[in-house]
Image (tube, rainbow, N blue to C red; front, side, top):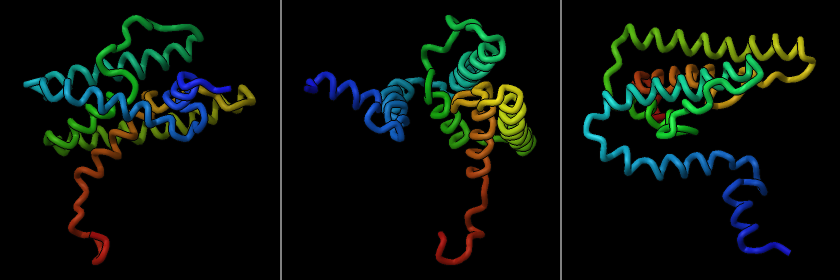
Length: 167
């Protein structure tokens, strides 16, 4: 017999339907938006938090997977963990002008991230004879790099050149 608390726990942890795993992350982003709105100098603060989040969430976790043990777990960013760095990156790309040279660097990072994910997973999986988790994860650096490049590409796409009927 299921209790109300058991059902609520299952729904909050997405156990009945794993395909909705992102709902909890999305809800966390919604909860943090009012706090972010109170920050006066978003550009300076977001730049710092984005870099800190990518280092602590993406690179430290990657190093942990490579080394086989936790790597600086206490330095994880408590302010922007989970999907919140994507929210901040999306805000940055959507609200601040990114110089053309920086966009090309970002696109290059996206290609490096995608190829690292693809080739790295293949190479490690072949040697392990199982799918290697080293390059996997939506907060792993390859995913952050190519997601940011896609965000930027969509921001700077000239949408006025779409064929008639698609706008």
